[in-house]
Image (cartoon, rainbow, N blue to C red):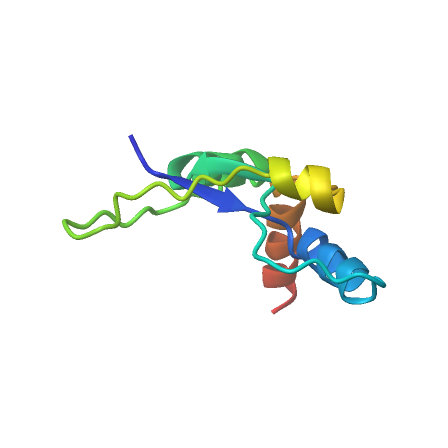
Length: 102
């Protein structure tokens, strides 16, 4: 099984930065933010579902990173009010659309 990775839409990240950079009380610290934690293979399957005929190629090598990078948003939700709006599919559709324009 593949290792989990956190994914977050750039617009969700930008929103958190903008809101808290302009707040009266800046909260110190580092915050885990993600929309979901999924395996890279699952990400590839989502891409294939969104764009029929598209095929992801996953590179497997002996030295690949086996660590899990799964993160929990609970503290960011409670203290910052963080609730991601955009799904991973939204970000993938945006990337596919951008690639088509290049």
